[in-house]
Image (tube, one colour):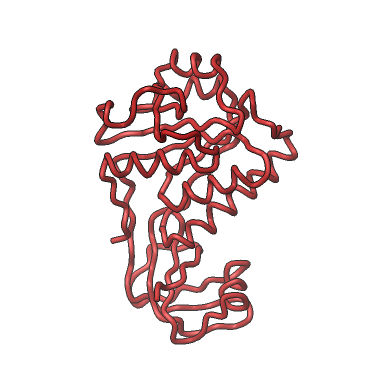
Length: 248
């Protein structure tokens, strides 16, 4: 059985140290997951360091373990970033969940022209909180040691400035003619994928991104939902670039 993973602050842990998970995460571990003394669990700091060990003490709001193994997940030479257009319902959060499970490094919300959802300042704070919570939970579910960064929402002009800083940027588009096998992919650096909303990207948006250096990419012979397109693209990129990010 795979050990449960919880997120907590870690300070240069060593084998033999004790680590306590408290606060909301501790209450979840003790009261909801019902972790008991003698069980083996994992704790990660969300930034690439984790520990595995046996639980030595619990109460209603915390669990304590003795570190038997220290785990690390170094930053990979290739870093994946996803621009996710805002979408109605839970589709954007589903995208965040699946991208996190696959190991995305950063997710950037984007208010595209055809996004039905509009984030006001107050709503943005609430929605970012939901996206970040989703990313944390997906990190734990997938037993990853790194929680992806969820940035504040960007506008199109900000993305135009971001694109030239990337090693390569792909616009996911059902009208694209080229698949990944047509591109020379980098062995290191930052890879950005742009995912449009349910209504698709406008011709103006595509042209604007291409002028900044982005390239159109076809990842399916069908039209994918905004919630799944990024996941399909990321899985293909990882397969082509052979990125492995298992904890050591």
